[in-house]
Image (cartoon, rainbow, N blue to C red; front, side):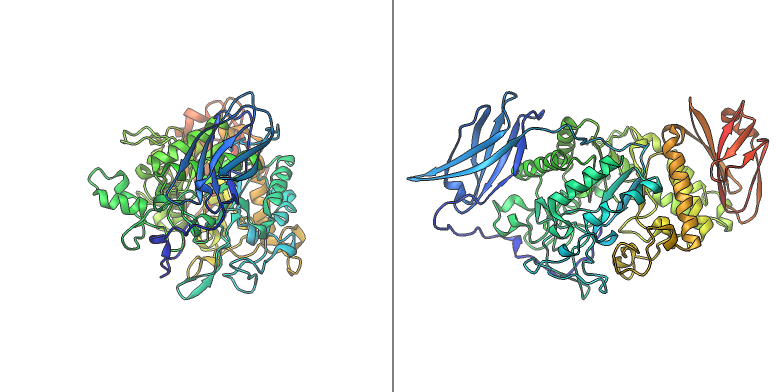
Length: 629
């Protein structure tokens, strides 16, 4: 996530604890419930209410033990450490708090775990579709806006306001995603963002992107709430699709309910005066870095209206970790994408990752570390480098490969395509450094996202380049991810505003004049693009060799680049001509991978090629050939 800074400075920098209120009460318990049979038998409850921290607590329930009551600076909070025995049964647990002659009882539920799918993970056999719920489809206009929320606006004519898209609308288009060849859906965050409009560069902007949480236990009601999210996940699973949840640990929204009455000053990273992060990750891996530069990078606030959480505070850490587990168990999501990964405290991230993997061994975790070099990217995932700190994150977003792909595509058809380190050589070089990762196939690859220029615009709206890049994305190693609308040629640059790359999907609203969810609503060129993605994605889905086979690449020569995906089930050759002229590609130097094959089938056209001695490559083209004997 990337957001522009405003001049806003929160009073939260030096919070003042709220005064004692008359009469203790319990108004909130988080997690809102838990389950029997979890691998970790311990859970820490955050109990909140006026003077809730001054109560003496007891719990009498078979198999549930109150191990410790923790008091903190703010008397409105208590943190209760519970132990849940393997013998505990589902039921209503009564949390009893006493003070003098006053007794307060709060019901908290232990539930039975369901057998429904959860934590299935995504692998290199998947194809992820990234969408912003507010901009994808509106299935329930009744939840477009609420007068009692901090931002009561909804106006599709204003690119910076909410537009009314929701989870019900997304569910109505699961069939569209399935038809495209998608196997997993990733939404930008769906949790409550009860944030006011922020003044960014003189423009009032809504938090429709979802990255400023105000309550981790509630899905935003403008998206349909918890029930709509659970329904979407269930419908996606029934259709054979997985769901990726977008998580944020580094910060919360300025309107987060906890920030209105902080448990303790150390809940946030505090500075004498407001300090922004430097956004520069280099000091983290730099062996010569100053400690101050590391601290500013990690503990500085991302922007003034997103207060920075102190994950070294054990209560903060427990709160975030338990919410992650609760989300997977409650909603049944399959994978976990982590926003601003490199800005988090890394020992905390290892602890959180380990907790999720202990409960859901198949879940995939991949974070956003927007770096431009392989060393820094490898630092934040399981790697083979002798770093002082060793990350346990299974995967990550592959920004390095994105840079190589886009750089190569910009050179296509130009003299740079045949230069020493230009054109396809940029892709080759990015992949050639995969030895630093423990498992590069767990990296999530992409050509654009909600923070970047749209892919079609990046390649100059050149349809030949568009097809080459998508061919590379869907045939090289890793887990490919595509931003919504790429398949129908949505375009635009993020400058002057991010809103330009977050436009509504045409047809997602009943009043739309065009419905590009249907072939009839798309232009001939848009249908050609859709069919191209569908053809390649479907082949990739149905052929193990293309998504999970080994990768062998050959040094590009004269702008021609060839690589192979191969395993016991078959061999696929991807051959690219990045020049502006047709070219012949002799295959003798590929004998290591082509020996025994005499012909091939063009995956995209169905054409049979009867001789493999020399391949004819049209200008600015990538061929995908299934080799045959």
